[in-house]
Length: 164
Image (tube, rainbow, N blue to C red; front, side, top):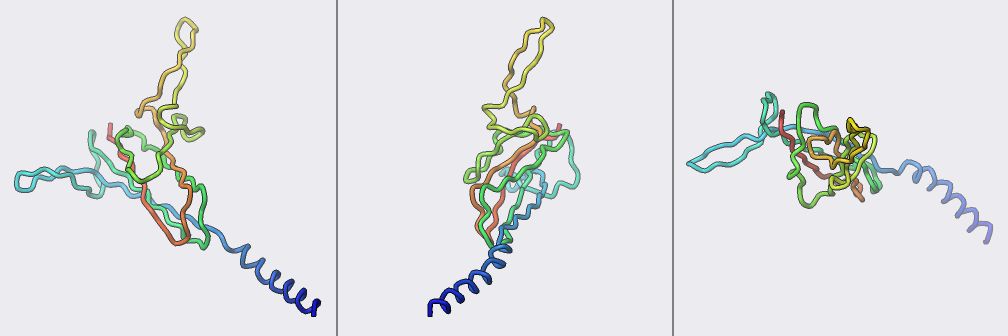
């Protein structure tokens, strides 16, 4: 009897290993760009989002980063990165509540930190080095770290930029 139970246990383990090897998260990402347009309807102004097919200076573009876990396991600490488009400036009021706080890069994605902790050094003509606080116009990339994306779930992250 012991041999039968042990044999059944080993057979079951052998069958489960391949299944576990294929079970994994599969996060997909897509990005959509829309511009903010002010619409006046019966004397009331409202902001509407329309596809950003033509862009002019001073327009505000809203980027929506859609993520989905199409795998069969929860994705943990998923990193979603996106460059801040050239010719634009990140708008600091762009964080959407209910989403992870973004981190930023000022070196094209080599390093990231919270906005309040980003700084850079400037060498003065005297040779002295000065540290400056980075501003939103210095940001080159944005990223979010999402603690968990359950299998089959999805979400959106948004950020806004102004065209120079």
